[in-house]
Image 1 (cartoon, rainbow, N blue to C red):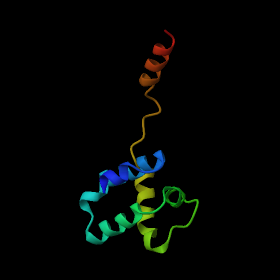
Image 2 (cartoon, one colour):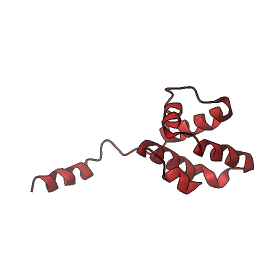
Image 3 (cartoon, rainbow, N blue to C red):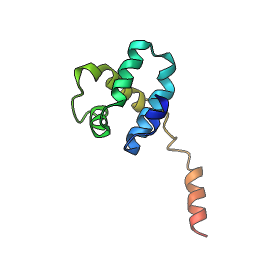
Length: 95
């Protein structure tokens, strides 16, 4: 399931589902794994709209979609005050 989370049809869902799988698959019970497996069979365009709140997910996936959305929103984000990587990028392109 982790591999199927990583290899989706659109890059956005690769990122979202990989992060979710990394954090949650190992602790899921059988029912959770079955629900997640069902989710992986859904169309990526639909999944993206459900996770981003653009469309209402089916009732059977509603709780899982909410959990995935929350996991993605709570992920670690890069510091906005650490410009070291940006400086390196600009110094390399200036050459």
